[in-house]
Amino acid sequence: MSEIIDQFYTPLLIGHGFIRDPDDQQYGALGVCWKLSPEVGEGTYWTYG
Image 1: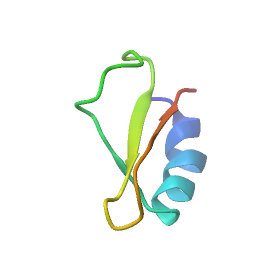
Image 2: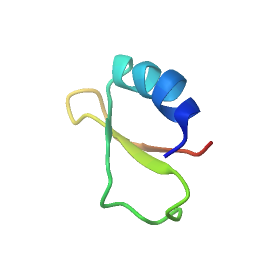
Image 3: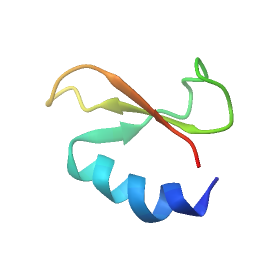
Image 4: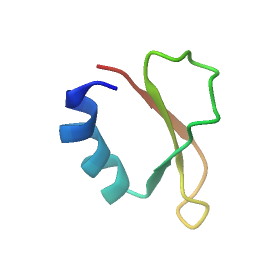
């Protein structure tokens, strides 16, 4: 995984209610798929670096 994802995206996304979804490979294995926590809402976000 890219260092930029760990340094910048991970704290930002976790701070806004996202959790990693490693089982979701709909966007490919080059990045990390995230989903909103059910308490916050619904949606996905894909990051790659």
